Image 1 (cartoon, rainbow, N blue to C red):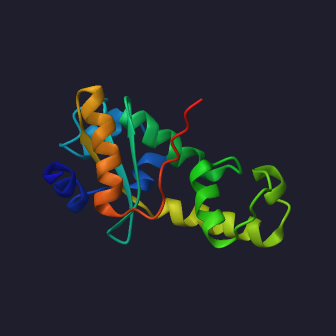
Image 2: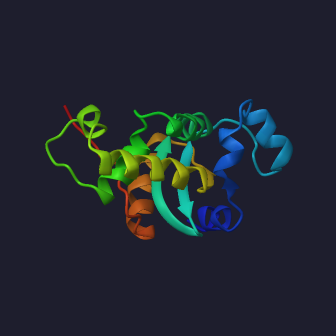
Image 3: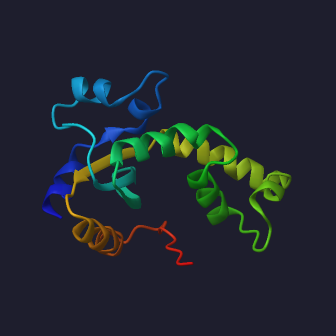
Length: 151
């Protein structure tokens, strides 16, 4: 947790992930602490406060995907932000986009996502990764939680 808190003090702006030709090599040139693709935990932060925490076996690739898809109507993160402001229970995401208030909330979410910062900490080992992800979300009290589904 100490390593993550240090990463949260020196986060990477989401804009650096969203640039047209952004990739991990570009991040490594700009941020010396970025060593390369790894398993890890990421925290998306708004105004210095944690908003979302997640884990991935390819953490940089996952963050690139989350942030680059933020400009599309199918963005899961934008949907989560919009759902917080305009809850429409039982309505599928495509139908929600036909509701003007929801669509406006979704567009605000795109702008909100572009202003986020990202903190990443490498974590090796599957067990440590999964346990840390849940612990991190609870410890940081992130308002948006991962949905874990078991089929």
